[in-house]
Length: 183
Ligand SMILES: [Zn+2]
Image 1 (cartoon, rainbow, N blue to C red):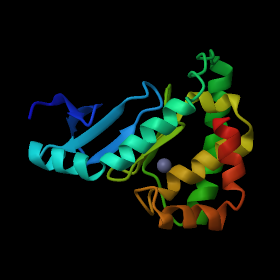
Image 2: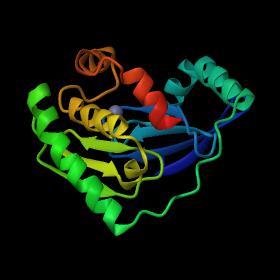
Image 3: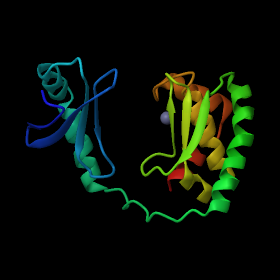
Image 4: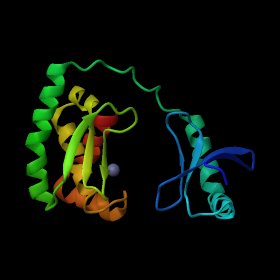
């Protein structure tokens, strides 16, 4: 299979793309409301198709749900001043060591970047964390949640039950704060 390809399954269109990932992933993007399939390089096209047919019912349901209740359009990008960037840097530099201590992990490096669809990102392999500059427009507790969340990925890579158990243990109000963050 080529790097990018579209599959049709039961009238649904799926945008498939090969990436440097460890496992196959099927999701509906909030950005374009389309189904996307990420496939590792080692997997065959047949594997991708089998995976799609196995998850067809889930995909159909998810697409229907999203169509019924589409997410609000992505917010207009807000300008972030230099002073705000400095302020955010300071806030995160303060929060990181506290949360590293609490969770018993250590990030190798971190940076700020303009991110459109994520508040943060943690590369488990390199232990590097990226935070969205947009966080400066959010209350401190939201920034703190993202710091805790990304560091918790150094314990558990995926958003598994185990991952949220770690979050809940150290950040009991995480659900409310996450709602506020994404609201
Ligand atoms: Zn995460």
